[in-house]
Picture 1: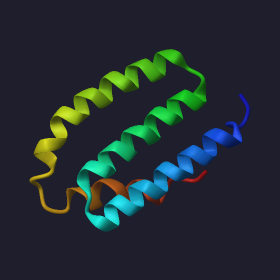
Picture 2 (picture 1 turned 135 degrees about the vertical axis):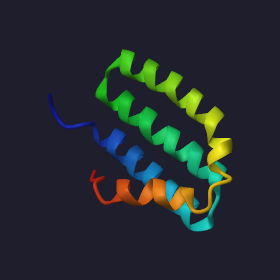
Picture 3 (picture 1 turned 180 degrees about the horizontal axis):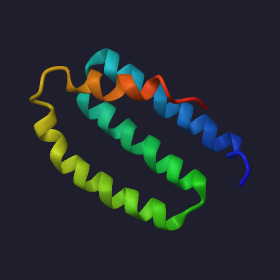
Length: 89
């Protein structure tokens, strides 16, 4: 298995930047959209159609529960901080 295409890595970086911007602006909806886009891009870059299909279904379900998360103070910061320390592209 080789390295991901530069175009995929660039898109992942853009999604991470968008997530960070949304976090800083406390824009919950924009964060959610960017988070979904990041994970679907990751699956797309893996070239695994089944993974992409399953993640699409999972993210549809996540979108339904995100409304409840929005009521928990600082949930957005807690959801991204652990992930950013391990993400490298």
